[in-house]
Image (tube, rainbow over all chains, first blue to last red; front, side):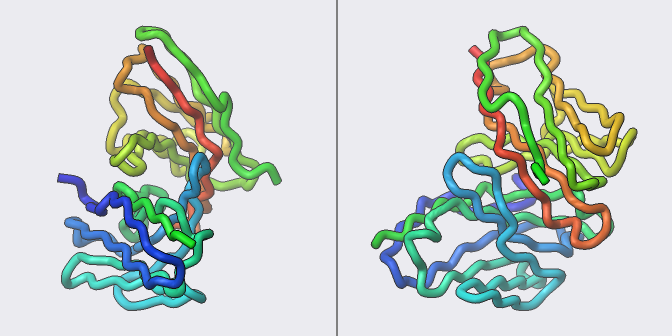
Length: 112
Length: 114
């Protein structure tokens, strides 16, 4: 079993919908939680990060971490066709943040 | 800044051949990593380095070697290519201090082993 599990989808939604992307993990030592976005045939780019538990909001994006359930989420409000990409969660242990463990990635398509 | 560069962009190898994937960064980052990406598997860490002369294994190190003689370069060597190594390979770098979780990725190398 992988340390980080993510439903690969694909997920298809109409423009304007609220999108929920999720990951579960098994290693309780993870302290840094990240979401990367990857457009087709490109390298991933950091979208959001959260340290330990709680919520973080950035524009249309909200990241949530529930360490008690070992569950993290990314919400996208008012989704746009330009949000169509693969979203990867990633996690790291405090003090070793150069070593990231990624989920499988969820492919999202937002239809106009 | 060029950021993280990778060469070649595409490569076809025959089973048993060896080759080196090149990775360079010009941001003076201490951390560098190699990942492979396969359909439905996400990014899997092959090897990583926390500084020149220091490397460690990731999740899937078998069949690959690395060395880090300079801060800028982190080549990945395939010793004897196998079809199971057909994949897209990404190199990434980050600062050693916070926020070292922000890894900057190169454009990738698409490798096919026949």
